[in-house]
Length: 325
Image (tube, rainbow, N blue to C red; front, side, top):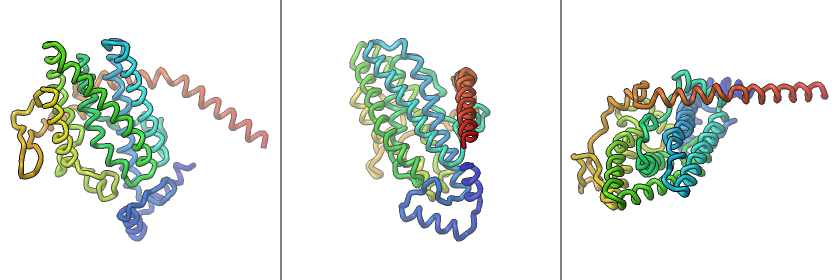
């Protein structure tokens, strides 16, 4: 019933309401679930939060691959905690999206049917333990760069969910950097593995920020509504400027022959990712797209009996309550 209420009010996009809505956003107010909002705003949030939630859940898979093979008991415990955190992040975000009138089941079905995406980075394999370090350092580092501004996003439930998520992601980034530091200071073979992981995850990490601003179909309106706070290119530049000195500290080399400091702009010049690869991965042609989707479909099907049982119990309880009244 609540979903129907949101649908009917959000579809009334008359100019006066739109102007008043934009004025609230420009004034820095938070939009809450029962407030009037344009249908485009609601749909954009569902798309963005849903993709974010799916990315947290699918993001468990590359790291889960190494839980049973972590080099020490301590590393295993840390990785287990990290994977559990990612599951929690997904749940926070699904809950935030549900306030917009879409159910968790609907979002999952959209993912499995190809109508909703998750971050392209999780379609790359984790072939060595160093890859777990690279994911924490680079992938979670890029995620933090994206997510810290989202604590100021205009939609209240999304903004509040991001506060806890960002705190936990900062620990994930540190544990990844710690793994890379141990390996970079280890044997020659360990350092080679660390460099190889950096080589393979560098450009996919840059792709996490999305296409350049001029090529992004959603960026302009999302920034006007303060669903996004910073542009793709701004975030990518900030990530590079932060990460290059960290690589230098590790005595690892960023795999970009064009990388150099630009004194005029106060940041690094760097090569653009291969965007044809990015779009190919988004279309399902990445190294692990098929495996990731098979895993999500299997989890969805294996959990069907639990969902059916819970729904039957809820319906029975509701029927009993009605009869008692």
